[in-house]
Length: 220
Image 1 (cartoon, rainbow, N blue to C red):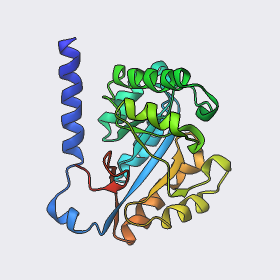
Image 2: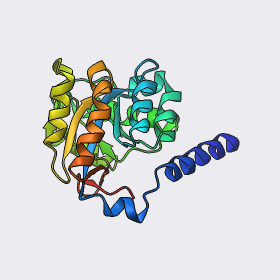
Image 3: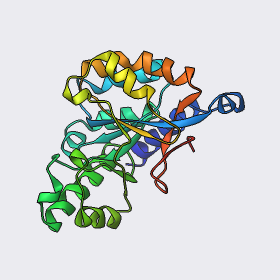
Image 4: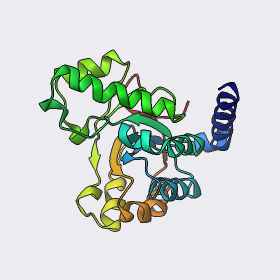
């Protein structure tokens, strides 16, 4: 167990070092946006997505489903090693607003556990499936110290959006805003190089989502 923790710690340190922001780079960032990818991890899509993000110097928040984090724990660790942040996206992606408090609690708590077991740490961000929430969902999320994160821009990648449309959606992002994407559409992965170019041309950088404000900020 101790050896495992040492390996994970080393991976975290290496990931942080790989994405360290120099003063010059920070000065080039006129603002920060939150790139988010839902519904992972998987053995088929996650490696390709992480590779595309790293090759284009982008970091993102991965909102993982607990059932997949439990099934593919190595991919949770790979997300962290690639410099990404990991959030909670429920365990089975249900309509949480149709469930009772105990069921909502199970969905959120089991996902916290699965992500932690995979080396993703304890998530501080939570995205309710479909963006559906109510007082019960918010109360349970708060119980686990989670900040609820929806989105400002929907890329529509889940609805068959083209590469051009996904790039255009990212081009609408303003400082502090967050975009909804998913890890499974091939068009989303294909759009990543152009997303990086578009953000850079506008002086925007991919940042982390603050658990305090729920907005995109400079990586800590």
